[in-house]
Image (cartoon, rainbow, N blue to C red; front, top):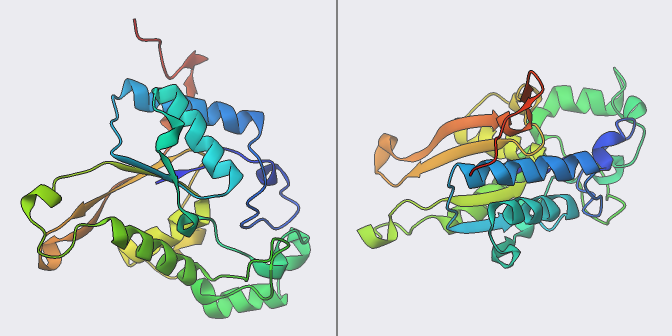
Length: 234
């Protein structure tokens, strides 16, 4: 699971974000996507399938990363089910006002936590979603990628799937996978172009299901003593 690069909306911290499928990447976001692709190239990552949400920022991140990997962007499959959650009528509103201490949203979050569904519709016409709604949406998407019960060995070999998606979407799905506490999304960091990796084990009982490998791995965006994380391969 890969969060998109920094977008224009991410630089407008004074307003509430959300789905906002039209917001583009910033120059920094494009560099982050390129660094991610270089990393995957140098790690010899071979993706069996590549998916992206239909949001401009996610799809562009996927395109730039694929180009840096030497992979055709035609392999990217658009998957609306992995788009970011909608904050309904709260989107584009003043963040300070919406989340003011003791205000209606603050009280609703304290009472309902991940089940709080923002009211109304976003400027794009999307109805507000709770984090639980998003978890169910992404879980249904990933369920379709898994081998059917009783599948033969030829259908159960390990595949590597890249999914370019969004911060709250990743947090919401992780919370469900881990069975974490209700406010999990407020206590985990998912940076731009970070990699969160899970492995699905098609085994019966408690030995099967999702295993968490790593969370928020954004080493490709770091520099040490002004030396790039990557060196060019000969």
